[in-house]
Image (cartoon, rainbow, N blue to C red):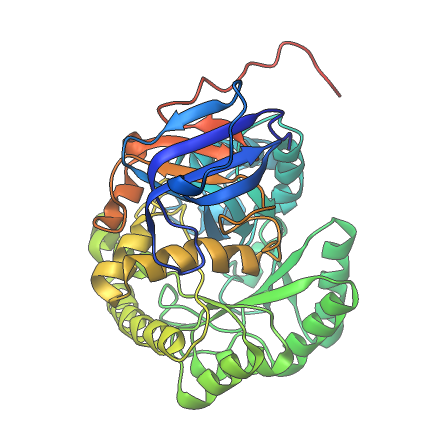
Length: 431
């Protein structure tokens, strides 16, 4: 991804640096050749060259670009299970992923960690974004997911004689687990996504208290992945599944819904981030009836929402780390609604706007393993910025409204927002 060749100055703004520090009321930021050279009070600005590009925030808010920590690039208005594994060919799925990537960037998300991707599309999506062929967030890839036979993601009955080749690897035992990870290694994946537990979406077979992988399978995944310098995460709702994942050496926990004291101690001891993805539960409850979700499924989501809220509070108040984002791409929880998660954590979970922004920036970058590059507005880091018209700390829901975005910037380059030019049309191939 190309960096800006010039110098930009953002002024007349409330500056939130993403570290959790108090905002700077009259802040300013300077970026040269795509990296931050100053971020602080306007009174401390260094002398500016005459050719500097000035972005006046009009009293708005400047913060780091947001990080979507559980991004499904290939999910597109999913309404039924077959939408995920047999409905669309890889060619169409690839095009859908490019639409979702562009939308994520326009929503202020300058980076994202994949939480599972059909056909390993995210590997090539990342390359296209990095080569400036299409706009999108900086990506950490995960590709196809791993689930034990008969688990949450293995829903095609045996009589159909088909597997889940586009969506997940179906494993039976530790050797299958190692084989699946090695296939992902060859395709250039960075994160291995697994399904240690079930979900409210499958109340009859694999509900949210059901285990869907053995500890031996999970340990085999981690040992093989870590040997190849890959990281591992997992869909963990049931309490024992959370503990198994932490003992097996998982690098993050998705959801962490039913966290007890022992699980919390394990999480804190290893400083493992958790990505609760709570707005998905709320959206399932509110909009599920319109999409034909049964009352049993909706009741299950109510239970996971309540458990997830309590676990998220426990984690953050105990000094743990939370990432923001998750499971967008369903009909009732579509792409483009990412920041509703942030509003939810303020209004329903009880976090402060500054805490939520820190989770959605600094912690998100840490989850991606790129905290040295972005996530906070500090000297030397990439100028990945979001400039918003208004006071985000007074009204976190401003982050849901793209019309309020003055600028979405990556590496000092203005990519989206009211001040941005249209994305350039490719007139010749540079390959």
